[in-house]
Image (cartoon, rainbow, N blue to C red):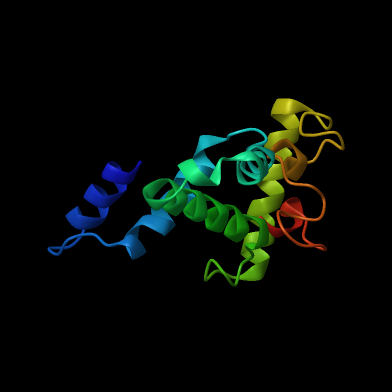
Amino acid sequence: VTGSSRGQAAASRSEAASADDFLPIFIYTVLKAHTWRLHSTLEYISLFRNPNNFGGEREYYLVQLQTALGFIAHMDGKSLSMDEAEFDRRLKEREDQWDAKYGKDGGGADGSLSEGLGFSSEGPNDSGSDLTSQL
């Protein structure tokens, strides 16, 4: 992912890619990966990793993943620079596709897309955020 994202960002302009180019591409990659229980896995790693063996580049990518999941959990039309009505319409379409493919109970315990992705109904790190209402 890292090499690919840097190459794509650099190819779009004449200068070298930077860390600022990485995060948007990484967020897109996380969304397209359709990884189940990603938030739960990330929480497990965060809680049970050996801090003596986890620093530098490994820590950097862990923080990038935490940042990407935080953005995804709280994203709305404004954060994507799009009209809220268009955002809500597209979200509804995706939820309907999800339900058609996996059924109403095809996500997590409550059948929601957010539970299927591993987010609790409270979001990744705070209360009051439901991924399905934010996508």
